[in-house]
Image (tube, rainbow, N blue to C red; front, side):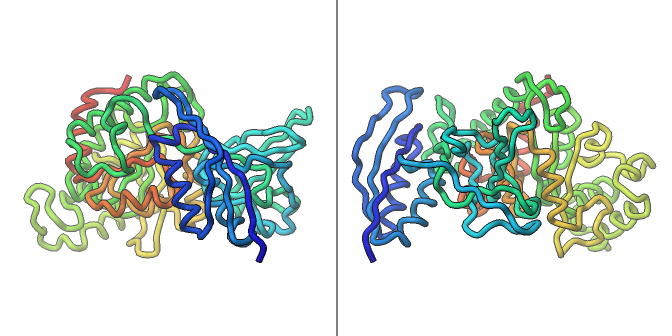
Length: 425
């Protein structure tokens, strides 16, 4: 096998974000070598840094996959031509060798021009179509595999694609001093206050919301697991919805079922919310409320009829806050509002994501990872869980912007509601 070489460039806050070090580690781990040809380090927090690195690999078979890994860190090849476009020949099937996207800002070179991708999303393909005005300007979008149609021109290979290096928060707040994606040894009150400030700032920002209607500020998304209810945080989360701090809610059948169980039966998974002990016959309480909501036909109908008169789902219905409940094979019931088709659930979530500027992942693993795949890297994402493995997993799956906060979700939500302390806006 003949050795192969390529020169890449990386630009951004690559020193303090440890991106340059990560790039070097990836090169060595792949059995390749590097030579730093030039480096220009910014002098202030606002200045970007640049590095040009020559990569030497034992073969093209080693170099190709390595370049894909480096590009996910924002390291782009110096010399690039136009992107290769290959038409899909079957609905829902991508051409072999298709470019798999990250959630980072991305550009595609078409006819010698770099065109930005409209909707960065992880694990999709890129389709290039003529613009609607017919002025010769292309429209470049990420498209999930099942949405590709025969004839769609799909980007193949890495040539002609550039991504922007991920960034970490900058400034003097507690997150800016974090040297890892996970905060396990920070004063939690300070961290919660900082999250509250980020939420407050985004809500005060002018602009549209996730449903494209005029909203007083940016969209705040909550992704919730059943532990939010089990730990007693339901009333505080309901308050955040009622006071306008939460604009969208993603969850599963378990969260909604236990929220309704807590408000109708006073238990969560059969455990008394007041006494903290198992209630007599409580094991089946969540089944009984699911059954009754199914009788009404929907959560909204159960609210309208007065069967559900409090809780997170009640406030979502009353405040017209959109929610997506995505199902899983282990769901009891499920509630009639639950999407049983996971592709339809992902599409429903995808529809609501535009306009989201802050995401709160609250004690949820699978739904948090699914949501992280949909969010552009520019969305501030906070993952709260008592288990550090959960919060690191989100970042490991490609959501580089995610900041993990290791703490009890019940205490976190209670303190967050206390910090925000009143109606949004």
